[in-house]
Length: 95
Image (cartoon, rainbow, N blue to C red; front, side):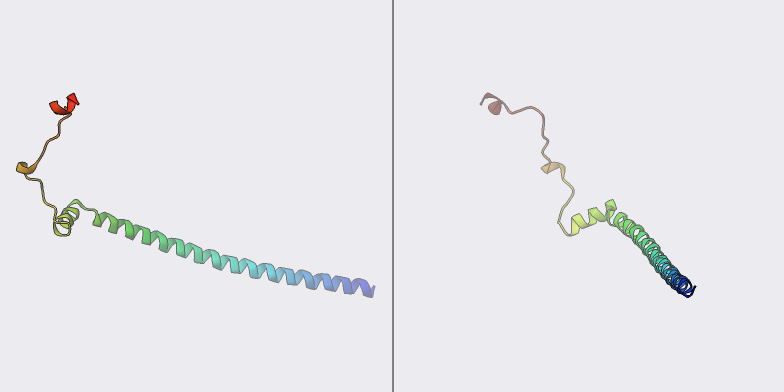
């Protein structure tokens, strides 16, 4: 009888330790899950902010201004415009 009581006591203690460990792991995983959700929300806000910035950087007026100022580009003048046609010149066609 004493042996049975001792075995049952050990079983209860082991079961209680397992229950405590399970609850600890559950809480730890829940906190980690909450941190991950918060990080995902911050990343989503950052993505939205960067998308807005990218759209602002790519406006046609800004691109034209940067082309003029930094690349010294200008609009083509009719006097320097060369038009390309689909026909070959006569001397290249005979070669």
